[in-house]
Length: 312
Image 1 (cartoon, rainbow, N blue to C red):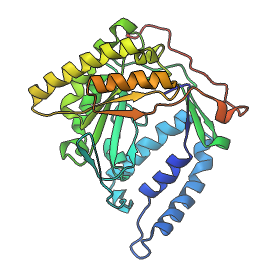
Image 2: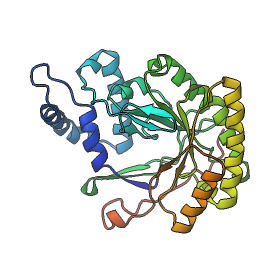
Image 3: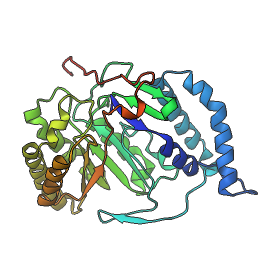
Image 4: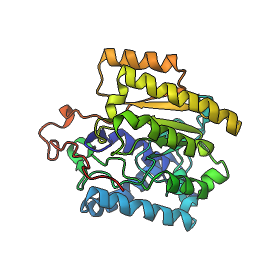
């Protein structure tokens, strides 16, 4: 998602509720909200003194240790508010989008926060380092982040192994979305091969699979949203989905993740392709390249810088 802009204000407000610690005596949402807000006010200066990616890489392992140590009991669970999408029942409508845990190392820790679904990835067939650092930038005046990560991940085999190790998967504790993409050095005319390879690998373990063709941080990836390119890709994926459903005796829905930076005609063409190929859902949207909302702010001119070396 690097080089892209995400407004985080609503995200933070919602997740403060999801991760509120219960008080056995004064167990009210307001008390929970205030206690979390106080904790964050102490942690924020330290976290913001670190590079944004460094802070990210510090907090996830720390959360994992806390949950492993049994501190998940101090996290309030949101009230049940089920929704049915793609034939799947989500226990509540607040799901964690892909990008936070690209390799599936922290599934159990993130699930303890009360999300209605966990989506991990984006994963590619082979491990790749992503784009050069620095590649994540805070814009606190706008409650926003610009990132140009570039699908940094350890490859689909390590990804699947992490999923298999998680209690969340082993005990079928909730909805687990697995997000797939292409390697940066895969030619665009071979992009479908990467998606098919990943789909084959992740299919047995997913509640649903997201096909990410809309990150602005893998060079030329959004070309796959073109009418002909998308028609070819979705045809191949749908055929693979049918074959895998027969093989595993289980139908796993496919969702297509699209970009926000498209016009009405592109939206129409994408919708026609989705309907023609009977794709189960669309995820709207990935992050934007627009800087209108942050114009003039520090870091607002950061744009994608792509990895140029060949990935081994």
